[in-house]
Image 1 (cartoon, rainbow, N blue to C red):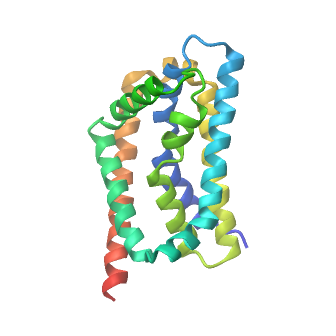
Image 2: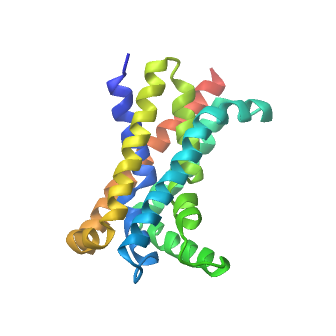
Length: 209
């Protein structure tokens, strides 16, 4: 049975972490001056690579963590701390600047700067450590097939929205404007800090009791 409440919660969390509105200006900058065909190819390829990594990690991540002897509570706490830092950077407008600097550094190291689908867009812009940790926590906490389907559906919807924002990145940035983007980033950052705090509290509660 499809769990609607879990779907809404998972979608909200994944949307905030992946942050399609925040990724869009980076994508637009990195593909600026290229043909529309190239931009579409990079958009589909970036999201496709991220989807493959995240869906694979959703199923293999638990086995990997078990082999390493890492508990779910430890993952909750560490994942919550990482997400809180991301949210804090969003509130103080540091996340976009960090992403831009990281993208520029990576592009200087690759031989073909036009192919940005794997680095930096696929990894770590979309499929970053925060996204992986959150996805693994969500998949671990649900014990039903319907819950897993709801989480994967939330992930797919978030990736589809990300793909759409990439495809319309240029016009979208001109439409939204810097002020609206800044406000949206800060609101999402506060929400992410709250969700991250809940992860940490759940981890501490689980380890103590």
